[in-house]
View 1 (spheres, one colour):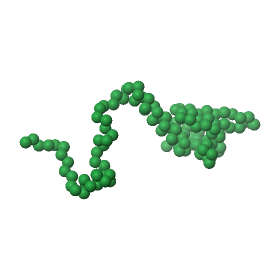
View 2: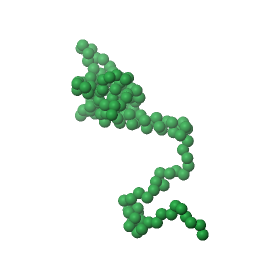
View 3: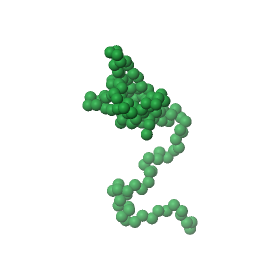
View 4: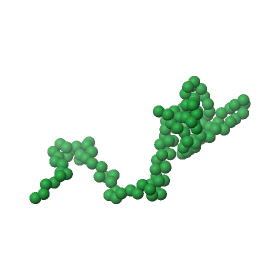
Length: 130
């Protein structure tokens, strides 16, 4: 008889915890059984979508960011209507009102010397500051 290396002996309480979902046994449910080609077009697209969703979530949650490597640090502060404004964090000054938040683009506007100035931020190029 050969000796088994990967045998796990479970007692009755551990088996009951696994059956009730209180304890995770392993990650077999998430394994499709075949390797993933990370260079395939589908995986590249899914990785891009995940990155864009992460960047959008970071912006909407109010993480501080820099625009095009500038020294100023800004943050988005939401309001009651679902949109909000962009605020400079150094002096806590209002910079622009947000009018649209998309997957990779944010449109805002500000008034300078009585004229409306449109601002468009590309979420792909923002650098989030921790």
